[in-house]
Image (cartoon, rainbow, N blue to C red):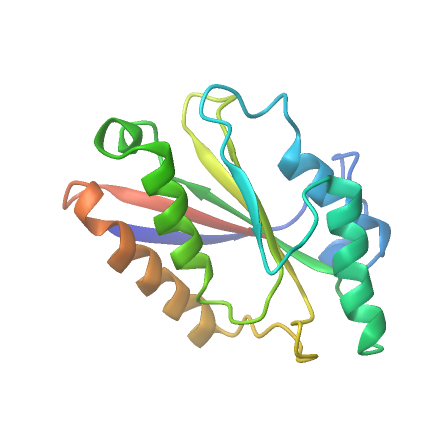
Length: 176
């Protein structure tokens, strides 16, 4: 298994964002609403959060905003949006519950970062969207250096490799 990583600029035609880097505080709510959209989830209905109390999109966005407020870090980019194409075959090998456990363990790589995620089943290939708050619950800024991204890719590979064929690729995209 190999994870391919792409960086993809946000399409300015998308209604949820017309600014680069999600710099508007309203971008958090729009991204979370997109990720948690029940029309994109169906049979498996996998969604959740890390370091979050709330589960309603507007409340998740508010909770992330309060962390930024607490540490006076409301400026700059607000949220980072990732998409992990996991494919459909993995759910023939593991249960929904097992997938959630492995996926949340993988997201644990980002220590102290609030994360909302949901599996989208509305396309031919299942994919998980997840958004990371840019300020940790400890007050530090999210580090998305190449080293951090490579470490996360290694975590994906080590946690999921036994569920994929050796020559299969998993695609990880960062929308910025």
